[in-house]
Length: 121
Image (cartoon, rainbow, N blue to C red; front, side, top):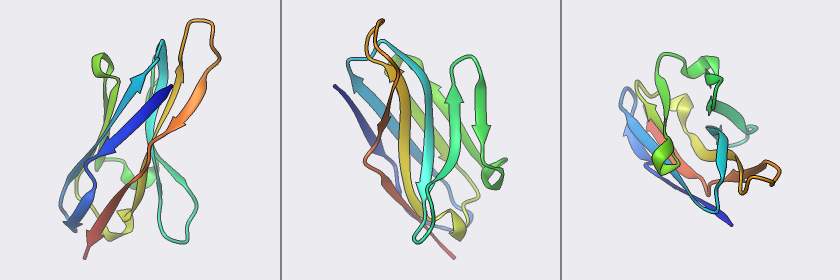
């Protein structure tokens, strides 16, 4: 069983910063990718940033230069540093992890519970 615990959301003024964290725990053999998605009210789920082992990082165009994704592999934790926040960044942010629970297991996707980020103008 794998659990993802997110933290770090909140309310911030435009131009401010927040840092999201997501820690994976449980039976984990290897992690292929860790990332963040978001869903704003009335909109579809959107990929924000991903970090894939051996393949680097990827960002949606709207956050490039403002958000930075990083991983602490020893802690199975992914972070999202969000700077220069804009009201349009307001959304529920979800952590996503693609991992193998054991050497012979197929890869599986896991999602965090979501954390609200609200940016006021």
